[in-house]
Image 1: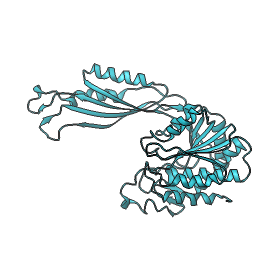
Image 2: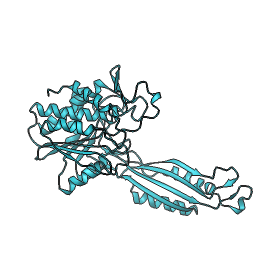
Image 3: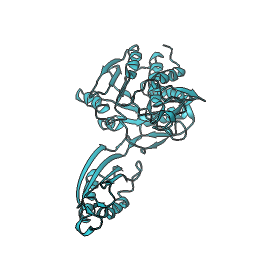
Image 4: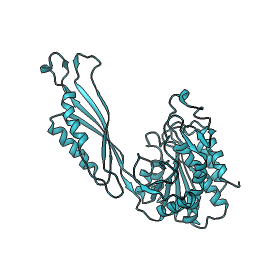
Length: 379
């Protein structure tokens, strides 16, 4: 196959041209699987609930090094707003433009060609290599990586090192490695009142008026100060709904949605009890519906982080910062198994935006960085 960095761009073009809007995969994983099968990888398809999942492994010995990624992308929005069609994969001034170019088909393409180069060069001396792909990362994430990890755990197949190819770089390729993520706890707060005519407020109970002092207090709580690895816990209200649409009717119910991104310094139990007590103190008639989307995780700096930092500095001259910011990722399903888990990929400035794009130069560099990590850990 004689893989070179330019093959990464060719593969990326093929991937972006497949409009794999979540949860569709559009054959991305099958195409990648064919390439890996030629190298001797054993392929396992693990479909679930309309989601396409692939587990591909070469070797049976420890340590097991895995790349993890997703082939699904978010919707394009209004395609007329794009400078070129979102699934055309046009290359303009060294940047490949297209939905999923950065999040995260660029990372996936770099993983695949890094594996090919590493194996074909004969540098693979010990341990095993795996690739985990799903088409359910941008969606509910209930039938994707978590399904694969549960099956691996059931048969006691343990990942030792894992790189998730999410776009983590901020200003330059290599400036940021995610070695953990905050937890994500969502809630819907329903406040009940009594509906009535605005001219007769004494006969009604306005849930909006009742809720406002409590919500103001809720948004000013200092949950914690974070720690050496995590920023402080934050809460943001995302939606507030009430009313019938008529201007002369006091609503009988209001609904508030909010989310907390929390550090390990604050527990879910503490968050829930604090908010429940606040509602009680403000004499609100409420129902709270919680959604536990992700627990915080951390990979202590060590073998994997050091290998990645060394690979980055050798390729770019940049000393990467270890960070736990940003949103959730599928690393939340992998890290709890005991695997050293980090995320590293291209610049994330345009992800989920119109004209999402990625630097071809960066993607070629990313390929070499991934290959260097393989050489350090399995060579």
